[in-house]
Image (cartoon, rainbow over all chains, first blue to last red; front, top):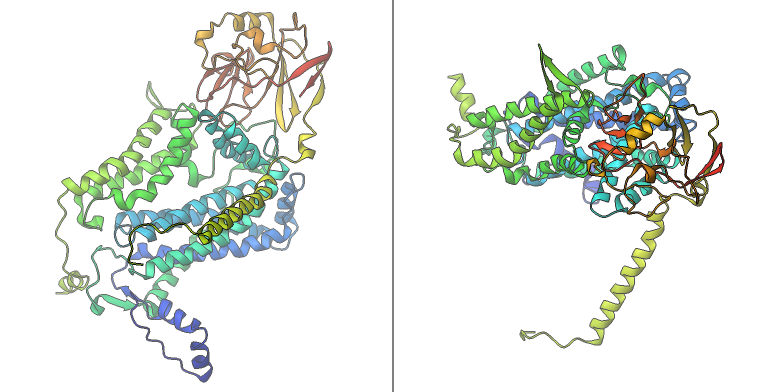
Length: 421
Length: 197
């Protein structure tokens, strides 16, 4: 995409270096001159925001690991020690805990953006799949991290999630339980589990950083998609990445950081669960165990199925479905802007995810009361689960055939120039 | 080699395959210690049994012990609860086998089989129900049901995580849990003391 390199080494040292390790050439072509469609809107800033959040999480995480003790007897108190004794420990921990939530806010917007503008369609399938892998790595990292403070939600969240594997007992007896025991390093979640989760929680962010490099590489081969979803026709449709997008992205990163830090300073426990300030107790389950907000939709899908193995399979299926989207969408038109039917189904899908999240946050036997009529929430969750799968596996393939898209503009420049006249 | 017929296997082909085979076996043998290190260590396995004093447990009460890092429910059932549990036909059960480590795997889930211990003679001890307090769905600890504070419809336990219900014999009566609460291997050491594990 970037075409022949336009880098010209300016000094003797730069020339010497360029013929040995062309690092400056690589940086120049990647973040200075990289040609980018000129019509990218606000929603395209979330890639930069995500990179910023990954940096924040790694930086604060490395600091927290200097003071945290991964031991079932000491972990909870070491976190309290970070909060009360370590200089600025409260700030760094609140940045890390809220950073996880804002990382997920950004990734969900980034994913919905990709869905809306068809950024997963040829030739960007690998880019999308790497994104799904990044999302799964984020979920795993967040899960391991949530266990570390060793509060009640940490412990019971770890118990429920690792027990997903015991559902495999219903396929081959004892195999699933053997996997769960292997993950625990004991008969239940305990000290051995905490230690290995800490090890993995420290490892995975660097794996994420590696896959991010592949994700950006896969982005730079075909180049950015854009809100019109049409291919760039030539240099008149493009701008160099710097200064146009470095400045734009920096502005939105600052805006996002403003909201993020408002939570860090003024509502640091808004996203947290008060039960996690109770030390882990292996013989008492809190009355309402719920995952962190960003996993609630999946939790609702799990609970909507009254059979153990099927529930776990539905939940796993909802995640794996994302990998197939590039081939499930049969429409030739990328951007939903030109797909009147898709636009409605898409926004309904966004609402559907919010409904699933709401259902996941309520207790297992809750119901929605309208006057004298009570509808068990589990039925709402079932309908919402049905739509989740229906959207990807039925609506997406069919719409490509029956929908009549609006006419596409001939180039990226054309609608801009037409509006100016 | 313009010839399209497969060439005769040579000594070199054999050596390639043999070397590759040895390397694959070696790689698998090297991988195993890195996988097995995550399994419970012998120090963890050594803590497998406990002795518990059950003399303070009142009729209708449940006491929770810690066994292998799991809660262990010791429940002293009232005559009325025992009668209710015995009256349940096996055809009403989600999981028809006893899940009692003291009995063969295929023992039916009658109330007698749920309270059976590893002792040769366990008649007259049916008021004692000992089960692992781990919901067979995803491992939460179910809440005990008492006449003062009923939990669910079956008088036994209700798991708040995902709504599974158990009866007074610890048998699952309402999903998503697939199995009855597990009965661990246990015996009476004396009328007031039990050994579990």
